[in-house]
Image 1 (tube, one colour):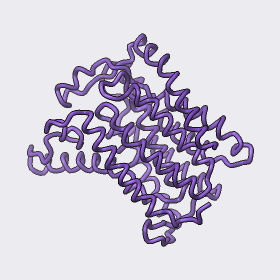
Image 2 (image 1 turned 180 degrees about the horizontal axis):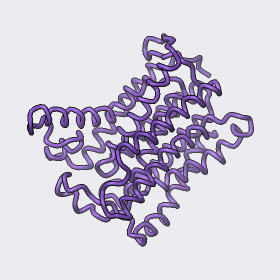
Image 3 (image 1 turned 90 degrees about the vertical axis):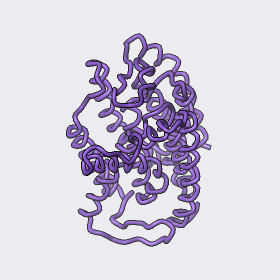
Image 4 (image 1 turned 45 degrees about the vertical axis):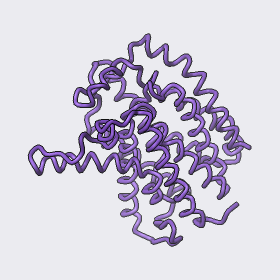
Length: 329
């Protein structure tokens, strides 16, 4: 019941806040600056309000503090911890968005600055999870239901790499209207199912609130988007997706549930590497992957539905792969 309440509270708060936030962002002229190297038709999006991720971040917070209150009073802080962890990344994204809006450029923090801040947040989170007993140095292998114990230092390096990689992959996916929102929604439902199946109510409330907030945000973010989530939202989502995986001690499942995030990132890496090695040749029409399909004639709506359905199918498979990790409730 608290899980359902988490969804409802987050949805309602996010939706109502959107009614106020979007006009406020327009009044502040907090519009997105579009990269000139992107698809030419994206220039029509110039000036669309950004930093809209604030609305679902606020909705999730209210849901965690209300629907999740019994868990907090009982000393179960997992959901709040993941929220605060994701909020750190959202804060990095907010500062980046602010710099872009202030200087009217599609560049905020440098890549090095973002990386160092994200790395520090990831390491602190992993150490905290270990100290509170949420995490072991045992690496769980989905589908095979086996674990391998690895040295803690090695595990920490692995975890930091996965978290920072996930966060930036979600950020990269946020390239067309509704895409990062639609792809992350089935991931949130996956975490709701896993948390409910294992009895981790506090994490289930957070995951349900994440789903509810994204459902409300999609009303404003679906093509043609009235608002973008900005780095504020996409980095928060990356932190939430990665944080839940580690809090549930199933980090390798990110390979499946994050299949679109990974494909987007790999396409970018492959394109840049091939371009440099061949002195100007390309594999994709444009990277990351969603732009490749756009250049091939796919509409933003088609990208949204196809990528979301692929993620949903991967999440169903992922649930089967981890359902034996812990005894069912």
